[in-house]
Image (cartoon, rainbow, N blue to C red):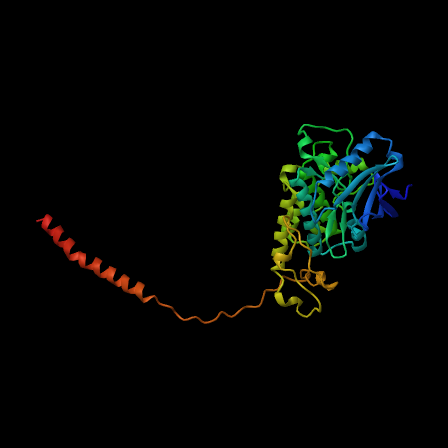
Length: 370
């Protein structure tokens, strides 16, 4: 393996291995900055199909510029080695965090998935479907920013035919959509399904469908109904459960159409849940801060969460026992009656004038009926 690619990028250490490539932590010698370098595996370099997919990833991701998508800086070929140079994200794969935590709080899960929705939704608006959304392709930085990566099998909406059928199925069996499992044409709703699977797993600690056999997994995505997530985590509110089951619908038209729409729905639910927590409930927790709605990530403009200590997220969790506490009542200030005397006077004049016309109309009536 060449340690310097393109006479510019030095390979420092291996940080990941994918289906088609190996990812290295590297350094851009010209700009003197850290980078991530994805190199097509040697055993696949001679395969035209894999080389084409690798080029497709570079082209697809290079046209995307969003805070929640890993930025592609360069693409090259050196001594028969194809490589992609990307921004280096000092973070952890979401899948690794999921293995460590088991179940996430509702607040944590929505905070991360809504950012993934923002990045994926931006790709949808740019005319791309990711087609391989999974926790391994979602990076989380120490300050809780989410970065979606790996557009290796992304599809341009303009190239998709509604009636297309494929014998080779691309994607990850644990997370791909029913239509992908059937070899049918993907759509933005396919990415929404995958995001829903991840949210289900984060909140319950389990996948909605699980099998060691990829063919059986594909069948379950197409035919089986998922266990309602509240049966695995009773703290999931009914409204959130309905959203999760909606995005796991077998029929794409029954899900949210794009990741942007899914993200907006999640943010709306998050705000509703926050409203059930008394404002003073975190006052005694040192260092805890609560993000205002303006500071929360949205599907159109993702913002970093405000975190000042490890207690931030836990301080915002919903009460686990009993009904939500009601906020303290606020005494309304006493107000004096403010009378508009001009209006009252005009009203009296109008009544007097109408009353004065009564004798006139009586005179006309009796005159005509003599």
